Length: 393
Ligand code: PLP
Image 1 (tube, rainbow, N blue to C red):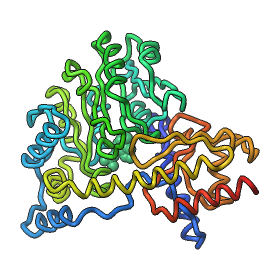
Image 2 (tube, helix red, strand yellow):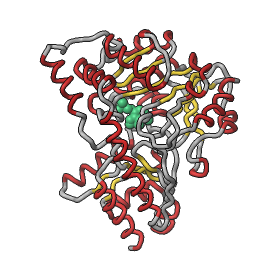
Image 3 (cartoon, rainbow, N blue to C red):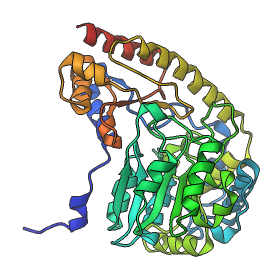
């Protein structure tokens, strides 16, 4: 009988992928499951991006590339960061990885030690705490509620910081809450972080483009330019261009840290897929109308879904700022249906209403559920009607 590494015991498989798998299992049995669990856009990857990939294959661009990404993709990323975010990076400050997820993972492996604490505001993207644990460090969760639109306050941040705090995750707009920090809110958080120079800020800007607040997008460095040297931006083409399967993301930050992250990558996966790198370059450098079209659809669905959800007794859903998720409070629904918590509620939804959604506990915020509206308006309408029927039961 062999024993596994201790680190395996510290983590759990991604709960969002688990829900998707469970829903797929019921679907395979022939049941008409409406899936609101997906963490990816339902649109096809735009044609000009696929064309670039076909071209790459046809001209034999199918071999190893430099570990940290091709010079031309790095140039496209540098141009994007300048154009959209007014931030300057040199090629040695950019690392291209296999999705934003590997960028996050490389960061934890290159930066964290066993005695370090990492601040993780909840609700959080499911992988942040587990990646911290895989690097032997300790996640320190800050809890939030709908009352602050699931955003941490400067006071909460100050209280969570200890001499061992080495990093903080920021994710705006947020998966799963759909909320974005305003520039003013980031300025206020920056004032706290400025007093603690040992803390690195990991800014996960994955959903930058899927935003409808009217205020131009700001990350922590846009709000506090002096934090540039202490911030790593994590980004990807996955959500913006409906390219989740292509697996291209990147990190921009201090050269010393980026080099260490590249070393980790060189000894684990090497370069990201060569063909996908060409596709990502086409996405970043090409016509951006495809993004606008997708965001308009997400906004339309968001508005309809929020209104619909709020008409169901026991659900309280705040309007989001962006992404393709809403994160309503379902305490009332839990009470009405006589289930124990959001986990049991999600199970009941899947078994009895054939609606797949993700329990808030998976994101560190019980009493809520995450619904993805990366699906058709008909499916969304149908799902809410099924939930309503279950409640009036
Ligand atoms: N960060 C956040 C907040 C996400 O929601 C996701 C994807 O679900 C990722 C990172 C990882 O994205 P990728 O598919 O590019 O690895």
